[in-house]
Length: 259
Image 1 (cartoon, one colour):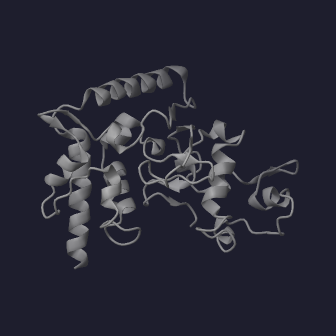
Image 2 (image 1 turned 30 degrees about the vertical axis):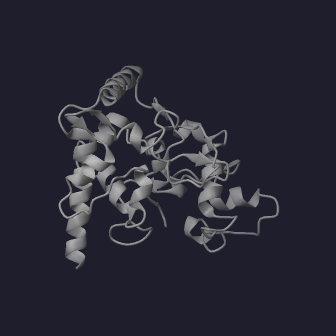
Image 3 (image 1 turned 135 degrees about the vertical axis):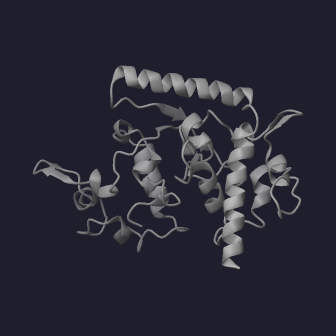
């Protein structure tokens, strides 16, 4: 059974990439984005290593901004892509990605998160990575509460903040690559930063994993909400590209490094 589920996930991942991005010629919007991406990359090379290319979360409203029908012979819509999946039940996808949730639950081998992340980030020369900078904010939007739901799956009345991020990994080893003691007067370690927080209990640990016991997901003090707000709306993180993949492992289902 697990082998069948795995085969289904891989087939779905491959088709999402192909139908959304590589079937025939890409839609005009994708062609424009591709040219912009190439120009940005060329500009980055000319201006030297270290320059960052920022993508705005307002650039793409939701999945349908890319997955849409351009013409009769260029249909990149979710419904058209699902029709080509062998063994997939008929789904009109009238409500976009929201129609996927009933089958692709939060957990499991075919969870929506797992299927979509595999489709958008796996494989060499992945179209989403090479032409859309692999930017998380094309799909995920930041709320006032610090959450990053997929656009189209947010609660009614949710307000999104516009943020700009670059897709750069300046901390391949995780939090401690940035949060470390440089000198006696430059201590950016987790323990030192936490010590500066008013009313926070003493926490000598240097591992983000130790935060999860108090900052459980689904609570007002959820670790994700605190980290997203502190990093993406802070003043100092921009020099690190406001990048999601400084913290999230692109090669491991976008899990937080260290968790």
